[in-house]
Length: 411
Image 1 (spheres, rainbow, N blue to C red):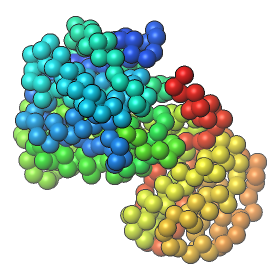
Image 2 (cartoon, helix red, strand yellow; image 1 turned 90 degrees about the vertical axis):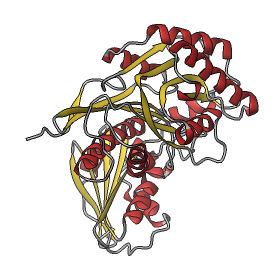
Image 3 (cartoon, rainbow, N blue to C red; image 1 turned 90 degrees about the horizontal axis):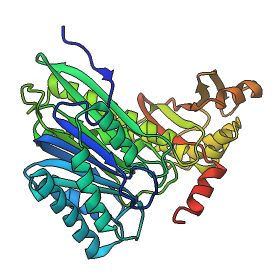
């Protein structure tokens, strides 16, 4: 009997053949690591999904070109502090310079180097420091789990914690691993895919199915998170597959593809939830599950409307059992429903309580409701009573701290 998928230690270096590093390059921050490298000892098939914002940062345009047209990829260089967005031709030239530097040092083709940037929009990259950083990264790269963790810490901006995960499963007697890291704390709103996320795997899988798995997975993972309604210019999710697990190639849909998809989706959902819960200034992960909706799309729209509502987010921050705010957000989502039929519940580790039924408030204990809403992870459950479809969205509470962080982000 082949083992089921299990969570293991590590992140981007958990899969065979992947190395990583994080170094201090002094791009914007002092006394902290602000550049990362992910490198594969073997060429990788690569898949990617990118921001839907019309204003796309230079690294997004660079990576899209590689994902669509390059025969393979083998390295990702990422910097924090400066986004290289709204930087014109010079921004693109700097992407090329980064790739050229990495390609010479790693002895791989220029079009096998992906680049990522996160931070302030409109500033040019300090390219000399970036190039020095790449030299340091190549010298420091290692295959240890710790190297992956250091890389995940080196791409943070306003994040308060690093985000990494790895899982493994078996395919025809071979162990296959999927690992990932991400950053994202503000300027996060659905529609691909509001952050930087890098996933590595040693699976042997066709480029077409790798892309299909990623494009399908983001719909119910990264695209279901919102922190502040702002879709970033730099959103990127890349998956690199180097094939070193040695499984029979996943070249068509079936049991092997399903197992790979389950692992990839677990990694993406975990990273998405981590980002939502670490929203700028957040004190709570705010989850909404809508069930018994007429269609899957309705369920997604309704769930996102609730977690995206500023009034709902403020109620979560204040542990205020004001169910009217959640009901209101459902009502303006654009989905038609009968409010007399909907039922609302609050749930967390502290318990579960019904607050609304048959078009009116249920007689519930305000004290108990407040206790439930005071946990670090809080869920609003919405029973639409219209069908069988379910969707979950993730966000965070809205705090004074969010305004403070974003009022002086450049200074």
